[in-house]
Amino acid sequence: MLTGISVRNIVLIDKLDLEFSDGLTVFTGETGAGKSILLDSLALALGVRAEAGLVRHGEKEASVTAVFSVPISHSVGALLSSHGYNFSGEVILRRVVSRDGRSRAYVNDEPVSIGFLKSVGDLLVEIHAQFASHKLLNPATHLETLDLYGNLSKLVSDCRHAYNQWQYKKRERVEAERTFIQAKEEETFLKESVSDLEKLNPMPDEEETLVARRSKLMNSEKIVTALNRAHELLSDENIGGLKIMAQALSQLEYADNFSDHELSSLVEQFSQSFSIFSDSVSEIEKEQEKWGDISELPMIDDRLFALRDMARKHQVTISQLPDLLQQLKSKLTQLELGETAIDTLRSEEERERLNYITIAEKLSTARSEAAIRLDTSVTKELPTLKLNKAEFKTEIIRLTEDEWAEKGMDRVLFLVSTNKGVPLSPIHKIASGGELARFMLAVKVNLAAADDIDTLIFDEVDSGIGGGTAAAVGERLRRLAEHHQVLVVTHSPQVAAYAQSHFAISKEEKDQSVLTQVNLLDNIGRQDEIARMLSGEKTTKTAVTMAKELLSTCLKK
Image (cartoon, rainbow, N blue to C red):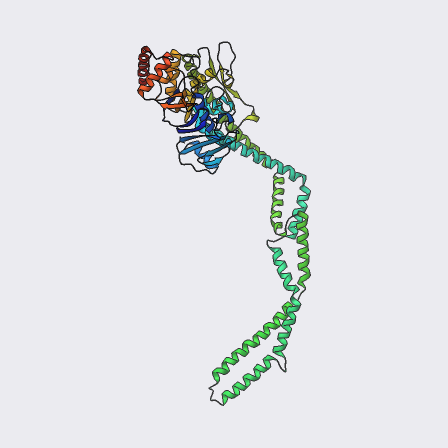
């Protein structure tokens, strides 16, 4: 709900800070006192178009700040979070307007676009006033409104799920048909490509393996030369390492014989080294044979050429060839399955379509029943609101199949007629602001428990009425305030008497200028203000007595 508003330099308001409570709050005052200015100020914070004329004379800029307290579960929290803004249950909307008409917007002290400010404001407040646009005047909201009234959220959810399932199967069938047609057109190419790829039999990571092997073979001449030189140094009959080691071992054995074998450990160690050395020479010989054979190189070159040629042909990399083979095989399999697979998908799609129709029909029936209840309830409210010749009807229009959607196969439109014999027409085409406000009140009273807007504002709801009709308006506003915070600008003492909070708006001369003042009235103040509203400029004793009785009667209800 709206907990407070701060206004600076708006027309006749230089500085104004108000706090609000829940329930029904009214604003009263003489014509021209500034009631519309206060409403315009709040509307500015909610994102309506700014005008330079709103800035008070002599000031550079004006500002309005509106503070709201809302439950964590409120839809405004999801909106703020989705745009990266923090939300902890308090929402602060601020608008600053310069004298040139430019304006800046803020939500919780973060700069935002005017459009986003309005999106947030639309979730928090609904204004019912002449020429003011609000949710019920938008036919696009009527379907959701009826569903809320009829408590049809479960059916709507089921319908949405069924529709999405149907559309999923439809997309699957369309894709299968597209793939089938495309595959049919390239059937010869597919078969030839699969045959060529299967013959080539590309392996994962094959290119890297071949390139590495080829690199080794290309260096084999250098490797063989080095191995030959090493073998020559070790095995030469004259100066070879093996011959020198053999001679050294012989001398050690000779020395060992004359040392009573005290050198046997050294002889044994050198003998083992000689054995390892001899084995290494043999390994060099084997490596000479292996690296000396480069006959594999042409085969590797041919293989790499074939792989690269195939990759170029299909415009892929060599590493993608194995996957490409599987993809082409899959297309051929789909082609071979042909109409059989598509027929299966068509059957599944039709099953989901019929399921959607069944649920959507249930939803349509439930909407029709809810519409009858809503029409009856609203119609009962109209006579006491001085709309006794008016008619309200909820029209449910069946959509064509091309228009069916996740919310069902209906379009809903609220129709009204304000006079007998006048054809029903959409509710937003009512000409009179007063009639429109009272119509909205009749609808809102019946939607109170289901409506998710916390704060409702009514202006001109008592236009052209008085007496018992005004009392009926006040009583319904009080009922509406059981579910919402309701703010009302009124000229009617009967409406004002039903309020739980009452602000009086007046004009005051100060420093050779006229300023708007807003004061919260206590019980005595309320009595005096309602007496003024009853009697006019001069408050009479009779008016005071009537005001006491009116307050006593209305507050007991």
